[in-house]
Length: 88
Image 1 (cartoon, rainbow, N blue to C red):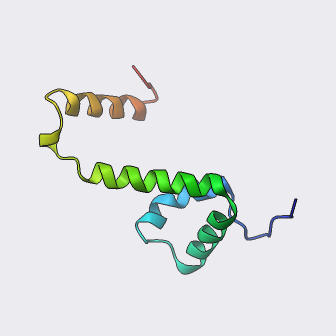
Image 2 (image 1 turned 45 degrees about the vertical axis):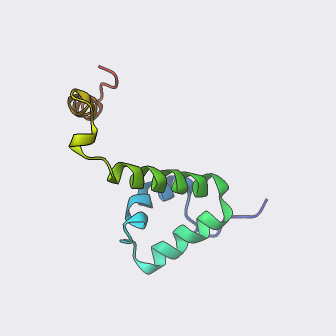
Image 3 (image 1 turned 135 degrees about the horizontal axis):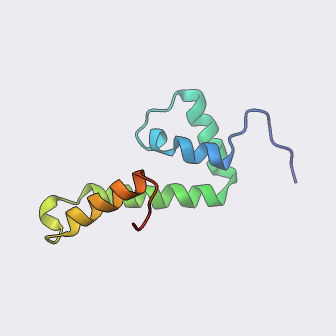
């Protein structure tokens, strides 16, 4: 097992930065740390691929593509999640 370098990115840090990475908003140094972590962490690389696929699919959704009550169900689930009451 190799020792981590002082500036290595942890998996937790990667998760916190992934949105900025996908939106190409990370400064160069952070982007390089992010990509170095991806090169050695298959779990985070898979996570990034899944998020990117999800983001692309969701980006194609429109209000018209949702069944009648789906929009309200999604909004209610999001509000409950924000309040700390999942599934409430």
